Amino acid sequence: MAQAQEIRFVDTTIRDGQQSLWATNMRTAVMLPALEQLDRAGFDAIEIHANSFEKKMVRELLENPFDRLRLAREHAPNTRLRIIRGRYLTSFQIAPLALEKLWYELMGAYGIEEVRTSDSSNTVAVWKKHIEMARAAGVDTIINLIFSISPRHTDDYYARKAREAAALRPYRICLKDPGALLTPKRLQTLVPSILAETGDIPVEFHTHCNTGLGGLCTLEAIELGIHCVNTAVPPMAEGSSNPSTFDVARNARVLGYNTLLDEEVLKPVEQGLLRAARQDGMPVGVPQTYDASHYIHQVPGGMISNLRFQLGRAGLADRLHEVLDEIGWVRRDFGYPIMVTPYSQFMGAQAMMNILAGERYRTVSDEIIQYALGFWGEDEREAIDPEVRDKVLDRPRARELEKSPPREIDLDELRARHSGKGISDEEMLLRIFTDAESVEVMRAAKTPMRPGPAGIAGLIDQVSRSQRVKFLQIQGKDMNLCLQGSRADDQRAKP
Image (cartoon, rainbow, N blue to C red; front, side, top):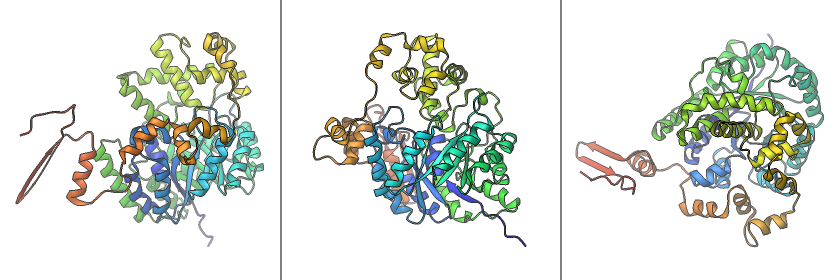
């Protein structure tokens, strides 16, 4: 009897799962207990971080990203750790090469074994540069072959890109569907086209569940010959996140595959994250209904939660669908860029500006102007509708930026600009991601990153740090304990 084909899993629970559902608001103290269990489950790798997390962590969570990396390695010593990144380290700005090399060196020093790297336009020259920097630091590269839908993004396009990626000899290639755009039918021609060109380079599959098809597409990819898949443990699965590890593993076994996972070890992860969601008022992933409009705006899972969050803070939550429709128009005007960081954010921010201004391109960001100037790539510039490009560039700010294109600078100049002598490379990077004042505030806060005490002591500790809980009463046979907040904005009379 032939041995069952083995299916390998890469865990995305504490990276893409929380980015897609919690807008990157998961604290390190919540992650670490989950990591200990994930480390024992048999995953090929665990995604723990993205280079878009730093600003959020420093300015809002008041946590040090490098402390998180160090603690993650301590709590998951047996599994390869993976970080996700885009073309540039600073995501939304063009970064100098010296900064990129330094980042890779630090990742290797912190024990990160893998980086899954995206280029917003699947550009071979950018892939090559990142593979070379990662290899020099002892880090393996997974090239993201990013899926999109447009007149340009055909099976022939992806076959050619897969061939070019394989020629660079990466650790793996990942067919990445950040916008949840794939369907089982589309996969039936796409996957064979890609696998025919990748030779002995393993291929992973990564998708989201925005349209309710993520789990089904993952199983279809398995049946078509991709035997390493990305999944998340509930409640950080489904919704705009990745497919459920439990569901994919169960269905794969029904189809005759060996899943190589100890799912019993993962049950405490699910229970612990459910408790954290209830405590902090965070959403949990639920299966989505099919939405055909999703294929027009193509907003990826990791962005849509942030879009909801930002619109809600601005009191514009009821205009989400209007913004999504406008994103579809902006994307068409800009030549169908792939909706992945940073281009998805460029298109989303511009759509919001159009809606708020009541006119398209009356107001544009510096990033959109740089895009139209060709700073992000000449192919990107040429793909823009000429009338739109002319409108974007016909303003004083565009003429100002045109005179100051990004330039390469070395580490000495970077240090002089952001830190000066006597400050570590980690400190300099934190200041580049945010600013010196934000880093000082974060350090002064001394936010606890390890799990707190258990029992009643732990409950009191957690409640005392929550901004949502105003009053706590604990009653027992011989005890009646009342605690009430005394924040400046909540000065109620105590009973």
